[in-house]
Amino acid sequence: MPVYTSKVVWTGGHDGELICGNGPRMVFSAPPALEGRSGVMTPEDAFIGSLNMCFQLMFIWAADRLKIDLVSYECEAEAQVVDLLDRTSTVTQAVLKPTIRVRTNSARRVGKALEWARKYSLIANSIKASVLIEPKVESQS
Image (cartoon, rainbow, N blue to C red; front, side, top):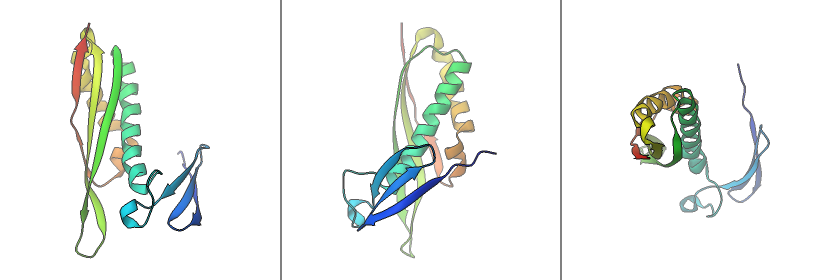
């Protein structure tokens, strides 16, 4: 069973550094609205970013197996946050909006690849928020 690790170090104020077990180091802060600063990653950015990255990797995995002639893939994602009565917050829904361009002969298989990507996404399977996929698929010859 794989184990993934990270370490955070407080660097002053509402800032820190994330050291990922795979090597990358990133500065992070609270969001500007919560006494943080702009221009660096926030935990909320990391949350929706991890979902978006994992879904893309699973889509590429599925596209390879289904022999989809992929031209391009990009995906916008958003997390909808609700403030609760006890002053806590939670993400209630995440929406992924991939734009996928494929060669004409592959268009029919894209739906199956999207299904597999959702089914096998570790991050999507690990969060309690609902995850919606709103794809835009374009074919070109």
